Image (cartoon, rainbow, N blue to C red):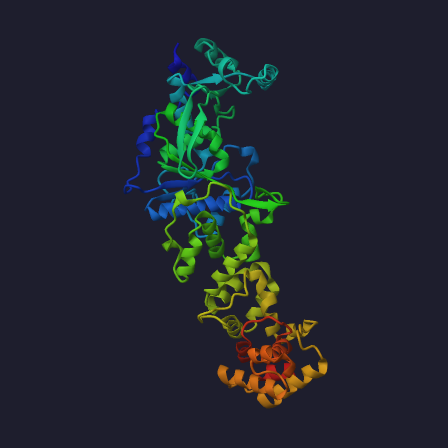
Amino acid sequence: MDSKDLANIIFPDAKDISYYEEKYPERNLKEGAVVTRFAPSPTGFVHIGGLYQSLVAKKLAEQTEGVFFVRIEDTDQKREVDNGVKEIIDALDDYGLSPDETVGTNGSDKGNYGPYIQSQRKEIYEAYAKYLIEKGMAYPCFCTPEELEQIRENQTKAKERTGYYGKWTKCRNMPIDMAIEKIKNGVSYIIRLKSPGNPDRKIKHKDVIKGNIEFPENDQDVIIIKSDGLPTYHFAHAVDDHLMRTNLVIRSDEWVASVPLHLQLFYCLGFKAPKYAHIAPIMKEENGNKRKLSKRKDPEAAVSYYKEEGIPKEAVEEYLMNIANSNFEGWRKGNKDKDIKEFKFEINKMGVSGALFDMTKLLDVSKGVISRYSGEEVLNYVLNWSEQYDKELYELLNRDKEYSLKIFNIERGNEKPRKDIAKWSDVKNSIIYMFDDEFEKIKEYEYQKITDPNEIKTITKEYVENYFDINDDKETWFNKMKDLAEKLGYAREVKEYKANPDNYKGHVGDISTVIRVTLTKRANTPDLYEIIKVLGEECVKSRLK
């Protein structure tokens, strides 16, 4: 008996690989088109690093008129969580990163290179495993867990590398007749690659991001098919990336060490290997040290966190693009109104070391993004967010949508729009004083320089009785504020006060702050004139009196 007989006994029903090569032909794309993917496991929440990889992958595919697809790698079914696949697809959809091809949520796949779930591709892996056995490049291994543990102990005692390689490969050279007999007798087994590697030889590999890297060849006879019949990640990814015609694999740099094995698998299978781009992880600074963002420690590691906080998807996308390409920030400053799709992303400009996650910077980016929205857009976004996450705010805004829109239109659409909102969860606190019943609940007035109650009463009484007119244009309104300041012993201009501080009680800014705080109970608000116009005559007089 020969290796073909062994292959037929192990995989009697497996098709010839020519069937799959024909079923999944080369893609008909223009030269230079990138075919890449996001390949998560449905084992928990979507990590911000996964969103980062997807953003890069999607951007490159779009720029080159290629394909971005999502493949679910669920061969480790013990760790799979309920609705894990749906959460992945929904998260990508939420952030405008919907793949061109992926698993169908309605029962049918989107794309012609599926199934896009690895557990549904079992017969494909069997065909290629059978092919390797026929070529003498894979074999069944009957070692028990106890035997493998004994091998590890012996290697440790001998101060040698641990693993299944070289002289430690107990089943590698087992006669075919003996292997067939064991299979017929029902002895449990797995399938291992018969590695042709020699660790004394080096391979040179050019990573798209990291540049030239040198590794020793892989000599481990790794498992390619587990005892449950499903493939390992290493074997499945090689078969899938070949048949799905992936030409650029974008993944976390934790996989760099696997490159020798993966290139070897492509070689043994007779495939052309894709290019690899290993992305440095997003890091966090803690006690002066850098560490990876942790699912366990850091709420911001979960993509769902940004949705719950109400950080717009455009802000998250812009922040991640800023991490990916340092020249993006300069591009955005020079192209404030352009769609991010117009930015030309360059993968070879990605940093080799991990970028630090900076929540302050993200919120600053978010303020810029929100400042470009119209009042109507802000209202709609806040209503959609608050309906799920803040019922009180939702009901408040729905009392009078026309009035709510006026609030969000304050300081919008002008050359320097307001930048006081970083996330939708900030909104309630930033506008609450615009509603009379909520205004009454705010306990303290945030008066600044002028805190004497009698002086405050003098200023507000004088303003409301002699200077306030709801119909004034902005210039007239501010001139009247200066007149009020002058009448009460304050400088009309800040520079006048700074030049001769002993001549005045203060300046016009101090006067306007008293009016601002009396009307809003806040020292910092958007434009006071616009707030007055939205509050209306009756409300302004009532609050001042």
